[in-house]
Length: 250
Ligand SMILES: [Zn+2]
Image (cartoon, rainbow, N blue to C red; front, side):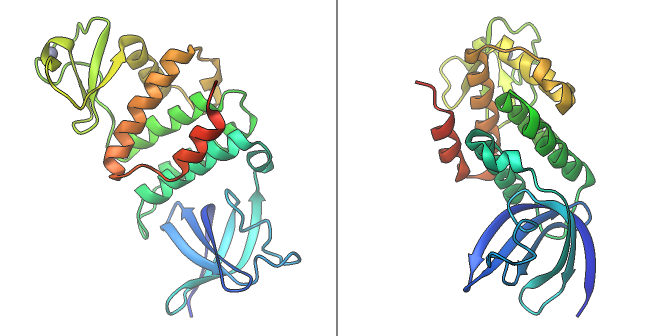
């Protein structure tokens, strides 16, 4: 039985048996790790808070035959505000699902880990969870090698794009209005929205809330980046329904 310790953030939890909990943890060295915390759902368990969603800590893990096990956790941060605020909980759950579904076991990435931790910290404090989350989405897509190409038309190469452009989730790039005439499957976006996405990509999380954007442009960038990630994921993230329910504006 091998034992190792890794830093990690809990992305997903699943109840099994009478009181056990399987955690999917993202670690910088090993990527996704799945391990069971025995008895974690018992009220007096030492694992109660350290194996909850978004818990950040040092996990001591032993390798098992079919499933690894958590033997000890040194909890560093538990992000209580993400559990107390329904909207923030929904955003954090969505991002946790993205990371869980778009990364592999045994393939860690320090940049993804640092980005996720920075996102959770800023999300806890920010009055603008929506913009911070879109920033995570575009930064995450970029780190995975799926940076949307927004600078010029993919067909004719022109850089003077006029007032609106057409984004193809499949190609991950934009087409000008002349080249996209008559085609379908595009997401229509204003040039203001494209500029905002570029600004979010270039800005560190802690400074995102200084960026101003109206509701219409926010909707556009959300649609664009979710269509982009949805295509890569090959399905709609399950947690999007909850997110859309709690953020719906009348
Ligand atoms: Zn064109």
